[in-house]
Length: 489
Image (cartoon, rainbow, N blue to C red; front, side):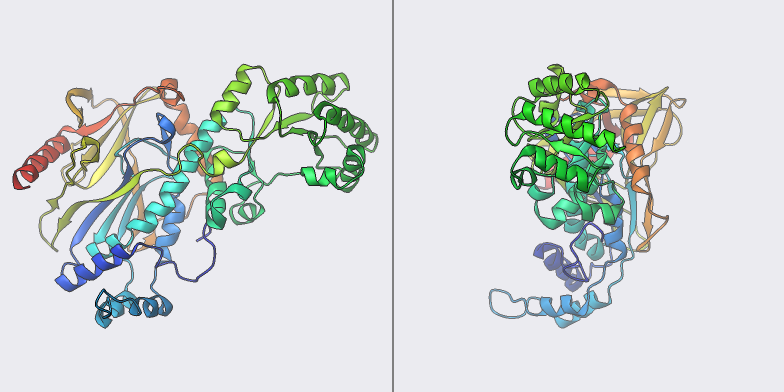
């Protein structure tokens, strides 16, 4: 899988032990082949926002296509013991894992689709043992990349279309985290990355010039800039804040004049500390007065969407934004609360038995059924999403959507309203049904999706709540199951 470190040829053991102990229990009890349906979804938007950009579906499909237990995996599992010192798994179960080939079906939102709480990003259908084994790796892949893509989209919105460079490699959560973050940040709207391996693996543009250590290695700042310009005349963005920032700008201008005389052009300067708003305004004055109106001012230094918005409000003259730590680590929310829940079971040839998980917290009560999401559009605007049970579809007529947290909140969509299902076939019999999209196509989808939502949903503070609910039939099914489960509990 491209976003993983090639530390092992197999990633089948990229899972929690309890997935394997449950799989063993299904095998022992004779329920392993029951047909099951699981959904991967999240319960709350990250960053207290009003939207979430889904990401990681294609790497997840890569993982599923390559899923195998190799001999080294099984040999390791054979060494695990219970609290009595005996083997944890029988040899027959280990042979079952060795022979296992996925027979699952996956329906997925297209990568880059904007999603909302409780909407399935992935629907996984197939033998219970197989679907259970996939919970942890699918959450690991989709949760993180969705989190970073959403953060990147927010940051890019804050710049008002000015390019964002992802600079997070050195602060990212390990090698895997860095590669996944660079990919997801590009999907979310970043223009380039400093991560060269991510560039090679994913075709992301790479950007970068020099650090403070370059300047400090010379006797003077001027000498450092001149030497760099001599070595790389076509890549000159000078980092000007090693000593005195505005003096550094003046030195960059002088070297820029020398470059111009040799037929090259200074790309710009970078500010990495201090009062970025004031320094950028003063630097812009110096550059413009010297005839370098086209030279960019790049800013870095622990930026995020909130600081960028503040700088824009202060009329900062920054044209390119280098965002590192707070993007690659999703600094103010370290994880997306994505979950993977069982929603239906049946014996071969039998009827579906729908399942719900109860909780004292209404937000944690799961939805039953073979869920599909339909998105409604009027003109150029998305106006609501409804979940329904594909085994009991509502048809093409008018549809009533009910808020599961408040049954008095309902919305009716007439048959004439444009609608489209968000989950599409992605994997059948363990193999993809279509060639993977390019990252450029995924990036473009993100922008098209975001453009379709009211700006209130995209606010950073107290965003508007987009209408999402259950189609009436699914609402009634859930209500019956919850009432019955409470009587039995």
